[in-house]
Amino acid sequence: MMALLQDERFEDEKKRVQGRRMTMDFRHEWKIEINAADLLALRSRLRVLMEPDAHAADGRYRIRSLYFDDPTDRALREKIDGVNRREKFRIRYYNGDTGFINLEKKSKLNGLCRKQAVRLTAEQAQEIADGSIPQIRQNAPPLLQEFCYKMKTEGLRPKVVVDYTREPFVYRPGNVRVTFDYNIRTGLRCTDFLNADLVTVPAGDSSILMEVKWDAFLPDVIRDAVQMTGRRASAFSKYAQCRIYG
Image (cartoon, rainbow, N blue to C red):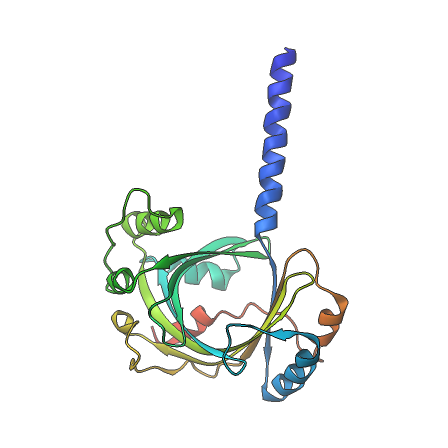
């Protein structure tokens, strides 16, 4: 009986530790729609308090993503419906550099977010953009294995290309990151994901999006700096915005 109780306590403790690890992997996130005047004011404040991202050239970079969904548009519907636990997959590269492409999985749980990423070759990315399931090794990274499995079993396929410009700022205490995303454009020819000349169009009347992300705590100095009268956190989604044409 004593051994059984010890085993149960061990399992309970293991679950608590796993739960804490899972929570630690997730980050807080605010998404706030702003206008051009807000951007000017916020940019001026944050340049005093935060550092520019070391990877940004002239304070900004261009992002291109290809988002995936199943035949029922589950990821899109769950986002619109505000489902508490959801996920979506995308592949992404920066500033037109197809030599560095990531497969990413974005997860949401109880309002917290988590991003996992793994490198892809340009050949793998093109194969995926064509809607094919790439051949991978048995020891391929778990995230790539999961994605290929879901392409096969859930019918995940490319849905839309999303282009935008990002201005990033970082603040080391709290691992805070503030970004401004604008010039959001969409392209429906997913097979041309790697083509720098892919024709894209504005994604409707899209706003400028400020995202604030942090780990355990958001320092007051940053919390105060990003406050704008009349602006509140929203559930804006670049993926959903870019699906307006199909």
